Image 1 (cartoon, helix red, strand yellow):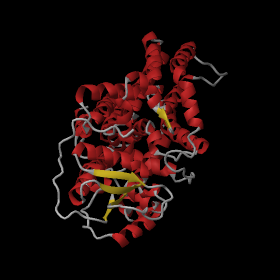
Image 2: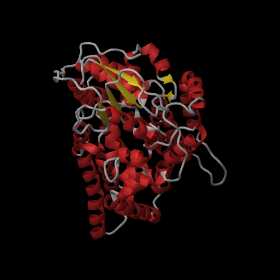
Image 3: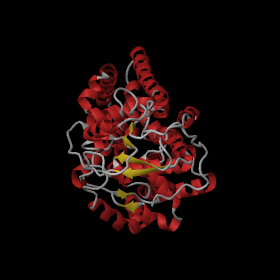
Image 4: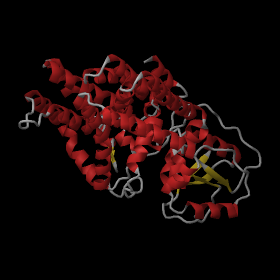
Length: 485
């Protein structure tokens, strides 16, 4: 627990907010009563619980990056002992349960989402808690177990739409098929309570899901590579082998070949772990397998139905099933090879964690540094064109905090050159969302007479009209950041 908390608190402020985290801040700023409507706009079909909690956190402690991410840090660390309880309740030994908790504590993908101002760490914490309560209800007939399942199941669904996966897992665990389908009566009652509690948000969620296709990030066809990539992240996160930015900007083939040794190491380790899991005959194995596979299957199905691009973050609950199977697989082999496999698993996780904290190319785009550099090299009131256009709001937020006199203008997705009129700089990021980024970059470089920027994580900057004398840009936050809406 201490190790999990330390890893999740480490470097909490080193990344500036990325666009989705900034959206969390904008949503959480509004009054509590307005959050359900604010959380359901465009393709952001998100229930309100996380934003209600975040509203109370920033109202008490402010809007710094560590504060915004603290809710995820705390719930991410608290998930570690909850996973140990889950694996133990499934019938595994205490040593296996402890190993599963250790693997989650060090898991780089779980650390990533435990350091992000988004609902996913809270989602996994509540979802695992609901399954623990379900097992107590099934095995001991404990009333408090069924009540806990109903309460935590409701909170899970009110945290994120993908929380419904935990309910599906719970039903699969509870329903008996041999000799006829039998559903425990308390399960019906608990599920009905969850549906009634979530009903006020159900119509809004259904409407948002129905209108998701073609909004937000560009749709991408399913290729079949999503599942192996998700398996890769379950062990190595986004900070081992190719970075997310390399996969998005260069394509999977180029990105993987440039990091072939690390990618191969993870692939072989995953193959060994899954092969060991297939040999298991313990009663917990099929249940953990469902928890491992169902989130990926549901995410792929959701992508196919709505047109939204497949994203690993919606399949994050599957990490719990993976670490459970990995712990049982390691425990099933004899002692000498067990020590070797355990050292490999823990070594890969720690290696990935170190790269996440220390290697810049694995970090999110650094909007804070980009604004500071532009403010020091452009004249007051300079206009900066930004692609993709939605990134302009995040940059304007950091310009307000740093008192940089800059104006950011988002470019159209179809832009192939700089617009007419005064443009002092071009800022590019998230190139997989900018279809003609190469034409934009060539257009800007033809007009450029400005300084070459330092390494700006996640950004490419081209200055067209540099300032004669660098100006001082305050690093102190403004008393009240402007509301971009």
